[in-house]
Image (cartoon, rainbow over all chains, first blue to last red; front, side, top):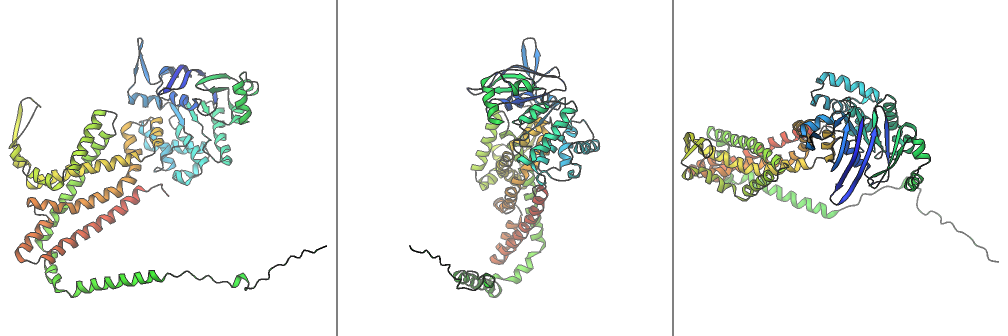
Amino acid sequence: MIEIRDVHKSFGAHGVLKGIDLDVAAGEVAVVLGPSGSGKSTLLRSVNHLEKVDRGQIRVDGELIGYRRRGNRLHELKERDVLKQRSAIGFVFQNFNLFPHLTVLDNIAEAPVANGRLSKDRARVRAVELLGRVGLVDKADAYPRQLSGGQQQRVAIARALALDPKVVLFDEPTSALDPELVGEVLDVMRDLARSGTTMIVVTHEIGFAREVADTVVFMDDGRVLEQGPPSLVLDSPSHERTRSFLSKVL
Amino acid sequence: MGRVTLSVPRPTTSAPADLRVVPARYPLRWAGIAVVLVLLAQFAHGLATNPGWDWPTFAAFFASGAVVSALGVTLQLTAYATVLGFAVGAVLAVMRLSHSRFLRTVAWGYVWAFRSIPLIVQIIFWFNVSYLYPQLGFGIPFGPVLFTVPTQDLFSPLGAAVIGLTLHQAAYSAEIIRSGVLAVDPGQLQAAAALGIPRFRQFRRIVLPQAMRSILPTAANEVIGLLKGTSIVSVVAINELFYQVQVIYGRNARVVALLMVATVWYVVLTSVLSLVQHYVERHYAKGSR
């Protein structure tokens, strides 16, 4: 479902991604671990072209992201086409980024209406459905600021699902939350994973990785050091760097 | 062997429940209030008793036909210059925020130029522009001209005033709108982009409503400034409020009374605008509490 091939990216002289290869099959959950500054978030943001890569290719469901190939050249897509591609890729931010001036319901209904996918009424019905899925139907008419961090992130997840994306990307979804609110967000993500959603999750929640991930990816300094099933990467890592990282976060 | 004794100090005051709080006193503050009250009383007394204010004349002209119709011109000038000024300003703001260095530079140049030229100079210039271009031709640039109009028809005194006020206002509005847009959290744009919301709708539905919160107070200042700024166009003999009262006191020499007519009208209109501002701001404050 997601194919990442030899992806490079640098900000100025500073290389952030130094040749990343990663595959996530349909219905699979990949959890990306690694120290801060290792390029995890940049990789995730490249998958929906919030960052342009300097080299390499990213495909989602066979479709090349951000470019069109003609012969040996990659032509940059126009913004309109990039936006269309993004509507197949849900993204959940560390800071939620809900629209503060819209109600919870309108936050979720906005994208399907904007993309001409659903009528306003249908989008609202769908939004209520999704709120049911994250357990917040009673908050439909609240504004984001009236919700706790955990509730806001659950709304943000519902918003990402409103376009029926093929994959959902999570960028440290629990890092901005009070410890006691982390659980409710992870519960929602766990349900999503069980229902067969293809997900890439950047997180520091090792327990979640162990329980939910099909593949755990360990990144350091812009490279994938190792990847494999959680039992392998978490319990008997082959790299010293992975071992020292895990010993610190566990 | 010595013995250590601990003596517990016995409370000499009464039990805490009986303690009363006495607020601190500030005698100087009261002295200040007294001074200001005396000054205000003197001013009010002067307004009521000094015959120089000439309230009967004020009353005679305040709602007279000439003043009210001039008031209409002032309101028209304000309305046109506000709407057109903010429309042009919005285009300039978008240009200054664009990815094209060329468009950014042009918009910057416009703002630089029109903030530098005094409004009064501009208004007299546009009033006289027909000396520069007696005829205006419309057609293909550098190609054939399809039709021409005498410049004077297009730049009537009122037209010249509206153009001057608009171009002046646009430079300021552009900066206000731009600062409002820049004040919106970049995460909002990322979220909108990640959801695939089309660019124009991102601006209209996500950015602008949030930018409005910081745009509005300054924009209201601008509109109020503009309302009073229209008095400057009296230099080209447009029959707006300030010009009209000048004409009247030129005839009857009741300068103070007629200046008060204009002043009170400006105060009334400004108060109405402040009230409108309050309600518009409340509308855009949705979700902030």
